[in-house]
Amino acid sequence: MTGSRPGRSLACLLLACAMLFLAMNHVIGRGMHEDLPPLGLSFWRWLGAGALLWPLVWRRLPRSQPVYRRHWRVFLLLGALMIGCTSLFVVMLQFTTAINLSLINSLQPTMTVLLSWLLLRQRLRPLQAAGILLGVAGVIVMVAEGDMAQLLALRFNPADLGALAGVLGLAGYALCLRWLPPGLSAVDILFGIVVAGCAVLAPFYLAETLLYRPMPASPEAAAAALAMAFFGSVLGNLGWNTGNQVLGPNQASIFINLIPVFGALLAVLFLGESLYPYHLAGFAMIGAGVCCVLYQPQRSINSSAQG
Image 1: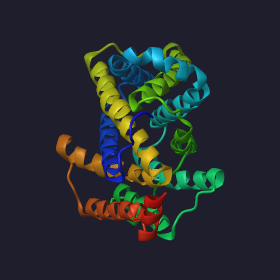
Image 2: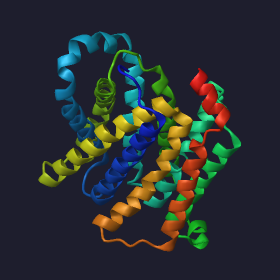
Image 3: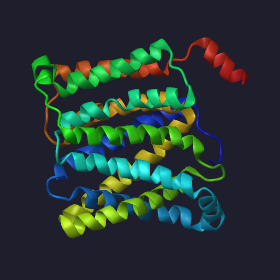
Image 4: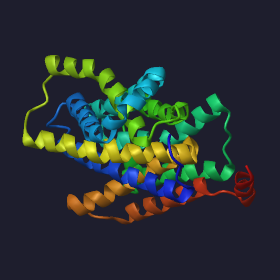
């Protein structure tokens, strides 16, 4: 990436904002998933993101195109992982429950850490491991509404394996960001990922259109796709990519558990839902988990400053 990277505090703010924007997408998707075909909504959301990014990148294309061509495999992999896996998650929502998906999504920090250890041999401090477990526990408290009986009554089905594969792919995406080439801005990088991902998704969208149902040409569908493109695909991914490159995937991934926190708050503001004590307990556990994962011992700070 060109330019200096933001510091840790700004990276944390960007990641928190990214989770807010992704939570907006979840709220929109929850309200529209029964009315719109999943791949149609996903394709037009990401195509809309490319259109929104175009005015920001086209002047630099003569300089960025050679970089895209040299590193096309990296952009294709990142596009397939990000757009393919988020689309898979939307498809699985047709066959399983939102509660199941929330629980599975809370495993993304754990999967990121496991992949990081297996592939990169990056170790986790005990306090960071405790923070990840606290975050998962906080999500469980929220989705189970503080009722253990409701948690035990959950039933998992084969579609949950597809969602699990999607979360594993998104964890892999966070690790693969280290392969991004230098010389491109964050906006140029996201544009390359979006174009590559749309190319991967296009055949599946076409098959859905021909064999299942087309995306309706309605103002509601266009508004949903445009809102998801702007908030989640553009703003959310710019913050996510930048935060990952500053903090690293292990620390950045814990912010994923803020999505249900923001989702609950947005549901209170816009859907008329209520806050309950189990929400507050979940918020506190997730917040404590984030602090544990981000905490740096003084010796780590000193060694980073010296390096």
